[in-house]
Length: 270
Length: 110
Image (cartoon, rainbow over all chains, first blue to last red; front, side):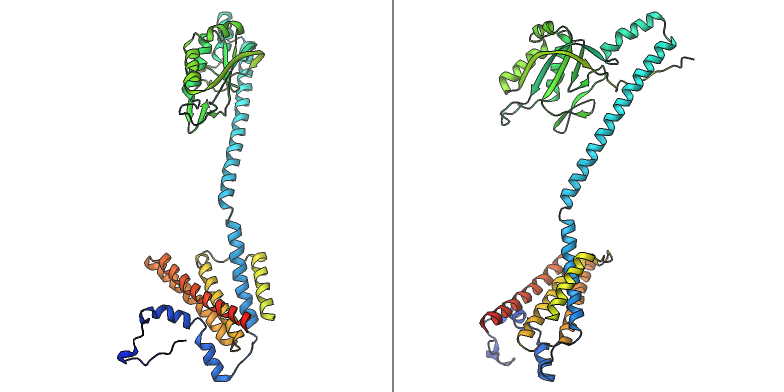
């Protein structure tokens, strides 16, 4: 240690006097009490207090390590918990839709068997069922697959809700009798929108690639699609932004009813 | 050697049992640990210099922990908690570093 001149001496100000704090820290790192105690009653070895003190230190250390390890994956755990909740809610939603669809079917069967409608009304209901999306439809179909452009750097190469709306409208205009997107039947009340980065149909997010199935005269639809507004829109997308799409035969397809049609006015039969 | 054994047993107990601190004390746990580490390093250096005294060690350990926690608590009350906690950690860190350097010199040059 550097020798210190007595205070008050004008020459006592050492050059590093302004670093007194750091010097003190360095000098007193070993508690001066150890040296004083050693001077007072000679070297006294360990007593019985050492073991419990170190035990307490160890417990504190272990506690800190354990609590840090416990909270470290907290962010990952939260994310997993949120994903689990999303999956659970989605499967609950699917279950409710299935329930709604089967209850709809049951109601229609009951209405038919109860004879609640006049024959004309019943005929009209049977006609409107498939076209509005209330009944399931089976028949020959075409499949329109739309996917994002392969080069994601091109601005506009992602498929958005407007593209799917144009595609669906094009299929209707080409003579489709029932259309579905990724298995969700389109009805008069279906909403195709963007939510965040995903396209939602009836508030259900879709993942790409997007498959539109349309039941009708397959050859007629294929022939007329290119001339419709939707067909021209998709052709433009492919040409300018690299969006990939293809229209093919899909054989026999059954499209489920749309459970989201809902009931606005209902009157009791009896 | 019993001392080191005590330390290891304490760490294992802390990890396995995970005693829960009352929630008001939990923010002061890290600072208490740094203060405890400083006392332990000082004790180890004194032991190697053959002037170890267990009374001084226990007193320095307890007072370090209490004073560090008190400083941070008062800092929290007046609104400079994080800055004071940084200052406490800096000072204790310098002391720990100095002591460990002295220990290293003692162990490898003695």
